[in-house]
Every structure is written in C-alpha cells, then in structure tokens.
Image (tube, rainbow, N blue to C red):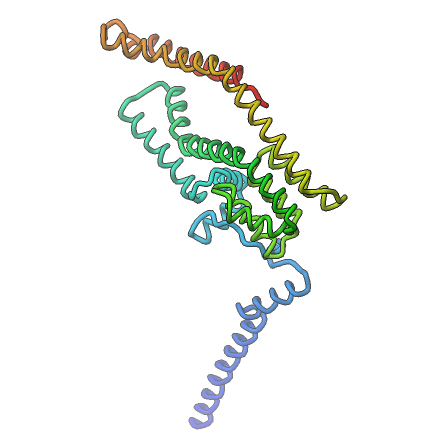
Length: 325
C-alpha cells in the first residue's frame, strides 16, 4: 500500500511538472518575445501595421533625447516637433530635451530670484516668462543670423548651379559640387539634399525638404523652378541665371530699405533706452526721490505700468520700421 501511494505521488508530481512546462512552452511559442518579433516581421513583409496600429517608418528620425522612453514621448508632442524644427533651422547642436531643460532651469532661476525679491503676482508672471523665453530668443536669433547668411550665399550658389549645368553635369552631381565647394552653412544643406537623393529619396522630395529646412522665399523660387523644369522641360541653366539676378537685385533693394529705415531704428533704440537711462541717472543723483516707485504699492504699480507701456511702444515702432521686401 505504501509503495502504491508513493508511486502515485511521484507520478502526480511528474504530471504537474510536465503540465506546467507544457503551458510555459505554449505561452512562449504564441505570446512570447520571439513569437511577437516573428509576427511583426510577417506584418511588415505583408505591408501591414505594427501592434499599436501605427505605420512603421524606415526613415531615420532625429533623436530628441538620449533616453529612449523620453525620446518616444517627445516625438508624440507637436510642441517638441516645433522646437526641433527651430533648432534645425538655427543650426544649434542642442537637442529638444536640452532646450526644454534650459527653459525649465531658467524658470527655476526666476522663481529663486522672486523668492529673494518679492514682487506683485503679475510682475512674477512676466519675469518668469521672460526667463523661460531666453533659450527661445537665443534660438530665434541664431536662426535669423543663419538665414541671413544663407540668403547672401544664394546668388553665388545659383550661379554655380547654372555654370555647372552649362558644363554638362547632371543636377544631382551639381548638388554634390555645391556642397563641397561653397562655404557653410549653405553647403551643408545641399550636402544633406544630395545624401537624401543617394539614399533613394526622389529628387523633388529632397528639394522640398531642402526648402522646408530653409524657409527663404528666394530658395523656394529656385526649388520651384527646378521642379517645373523637370516636369515641363526647358533651359535650366538660363533659369538659374535669371533667378540669381533676381536674388541679387532683391538683396540690393533690401540694403536700400535698411539704409532708409536706419533713422527709425535708431529712434527706436533711443526712445527705448531713454527711460532706463533717466531712471539710472535719478537713482544716482537723488535716490530718495525715486525710491517711492519700489517702496510704495502705488509706485510699484506705476513702475510696472510704465514698463508695459515702454514694451508696447518698442514693439509698435519695430513693426512700423520693419519693411518686408
């Protein structure tokens, strides 16, 4: 009886172990990582979609962060895409995560300063927003300077393209020549367009991507001319030469406009700096006379009201003297 009982116990134990192992093998074969990878490959080969219902892209994406989870999170945010576009156009080597970290760090510094020097709620909000906008302002200034430099290089690039086309080179080879012969930053953008074409991107899409990275009207004229010529035919070298002439004439007109509006810009600087210079002079000469502006509540309100009016006036003058050509 004891031998029969022990034998039944051993067989029952073995049956339970085999059942557990069989269940594990079935689960790993149908729902495990290897099975999911195989199923995903089969869906991709058949032109399907991935497990999340999103189309899988084979294009290389710019990383927004070194951390994979945060990078995927930022790629799903439109604001992060807009920030990456701004950084790409400015030529800065920051990532989106670094840009956001700089903005948050500036906000923390503003809050720390406001804790040391209390101010009205509206003033605290204005100061915090000003500090947070410092990375954005730097990126915008870098973008503007880079676009101005590219705009000055465009006539030479168009002439180079026209001469190379007359010499018998293909347009793809001409892009490579521009990327290696002309100075930066325009050469880097043409190199990127040539690399996209080498990787299999159609020429029209590569040119559209070039115009998207460099939001200049003159460059868009050049891209549109090339695309139309490829579809309808014509003398591309002559077209590029005419575009180069138009860009040069436009830059000359822009220079004349800047000379004529120099007086307005100087007036804006003088009117914008005069209140601060007058305040600094009065603080040095008679501090008690102006101390009411930051010691009395009514004076503090008047001070912030004056700063707001100065800001509105400067923006208004800037809009008046800014003439688009």
